[in-house]
Image 1 (cartoon, one colour):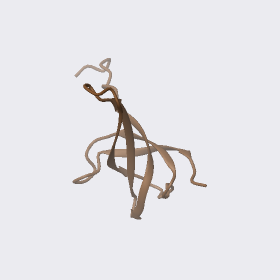
Image 2 (spheres, helix red, strand yellow; image 1 turned 90 degrees about the vertical axis):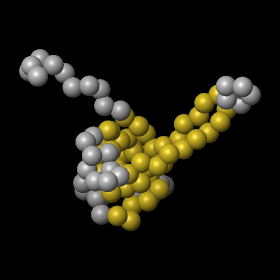
Image 3 (cartoon, one colour; image 1 turned 135 degrees about the vertical axis):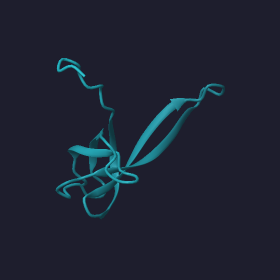
Length: 88
């Protein structure tokens, strides 16, 4: 690969921390909504992502931004980039 080639854009998601019981790992719930193709009703779906949190800074209820990264374990493919909003 040449030095001028740029890495592909990494996916970035924003979600809410639902579990912080593990060491250096948090579970993030990412919500998405879309129009149902036939009934045109707005449908909500969510998925949970395991994200790497090096300093154990994120806690349950915090809104965080995560970025895609190389596989860090069997389930971890994301890392916490920033804490957008702390839980009240």
